[in-house]
Image (cartoon, rainbow, N blue to C red; front, side, top):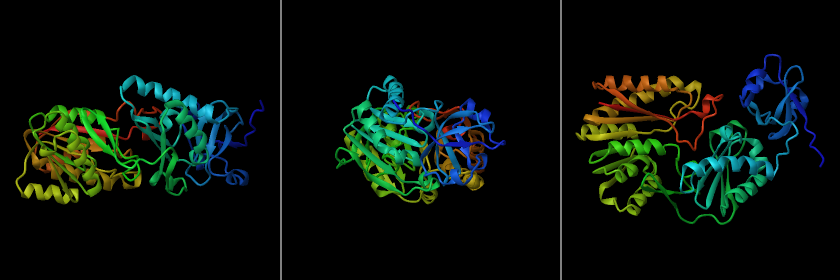
Length: 398
């Protein structure tokens, strides 16, 4: 077998070769010698990364159009990135999920943490949705898809390639069916005793957020017999779990009518529609309106989109998290619970918790932190990459 011949790229003397050797998966553009040859590489090209002394560090994918110019793929500089290579990574990822979950509904691949940088794959039974958020995954989508079918046995593979991560890579949005037939209806997803309806063709991201699964379960344990407010409900994540856990009633609020429709379909599938009410509107405005209406709840959950998606937006994002807490706290009954969530990796746990506590204090309430939750185990964290630990869910008792 002929071994592949890859071009080489080299770290500058200031490039952190030690971090790469210890497992850090990225090289930034200012750490790489970007001569004419390197700049001329096609986005997604494969290359051997060397340190400043020309000692090989591993096989990387290169994208001269991205600030993250290199992503580590394999320590073996002669690795062949083909269907068999993808199958080995996917088999390793699947073994972990199959051990944890008794049904095939989970995040199968969580990007760098599963050895496939920039690649997200969510599984919905016989359907898998790939988000190729890096140029190399676009280039090698066919062997990735073939390996995915081989390893998992899924019959439909959807590509949902859209969002901020792709724009940072200089990639266009793309959507399509790579294998099988496009699902014609939302897919029922069982989780925590609830049923969620995932629109894998037209919903947000891959159609459902699996990362909150353990936090849904904890919220449900607080909801028995109580009134629940699920803000930024999407397809009913916290609200439907609360009903499965015995909540007396749930009010689900979101700005998306299609998402609330799917949430309602989930409630119907669970036969709890009589205890599930939806309300469309801007979250801040609805929180203010509920206070004016004198509404009170035993559990309030706020799971907003990322208010601080990067360092530049951190301070504004923290102010938004504080405002959410200030507006939500008055709606919590004495002795009730307020769960506040953040999916902003730029806002670390301490800053997010402090902003939330300030908001609760500004609302004139006293609080205890009783629980801190993170993403589920199908969203592993790469210890060298803080960005992979983005999700925080802090529960206060007021």
